[in-house]
Length: 351
Image (cartoon, rainbow, N blue to C red; front, side, top):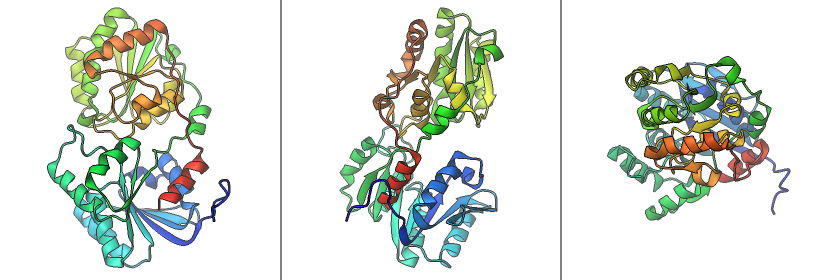
């Protein structure tokens, strides 16, 4: 019998082990932790294993996040050994690669179901790592269920002819938090700028922030008082700073470092340029920026097109941003986001 859509009970006795790759799960202040609380409320017990600081963080009285410190392989052994001491009905892993291998090993040993999550398009020509692709194919064919973040990823898996059930569950976007974020008056903080263009991303090679920076000089010619804010940290920061000096735009580019108030920054930005990997399966930053009302210029990756971003190839970033600034365009998200409770119930149904 179908459950009432507004009152789906937890699956009594269902104990879930999640193998996560995000150490922010250990912090009670993070969005990841708050999402886990929603998920824990949908099952009898949710236990999360993550490589990070060696601490335990309770998920209320319905679960716990356990941190494992050490090398990747030492942590994997410790995770497997601890899991064998407990009882779980479902193992779900954040990727079909090394984390998936850990989950598969645990599921094999305790004889339980395995769910693999897919956040990237492993069949994209830009996806590197032949061995990782082979591992993903091997594990996907042995999973009991697969959860993907977009219809595009689901369709890409059809070539594998999987026996497992494949469910589409988008990345959770906290629309209430976006709506409640207090806008930051960026032009008061940076009075030297008349227009603000924001880039919010990890500063890693796969995000191609360098391509965005190379588009900036043309934008400066059209709008001499434009300012570029780059929010994020990563291994490429010094390289990117050097690039701004090489291009002669260092005075107009400010590296903000990691920011917890990115929703507030979106609200006062005149344009956002999405820095995403070309094999991105979803693109949460693009969706969040549009939900905050910021226009987004993006390559055609993830759900950027469906969400309402202005789609261009990276070599045309400058022209697209100039048009946005000239027309004072605002962003509009083109699809409805589920509430936190609705998203959690949909997650529950994929198990």
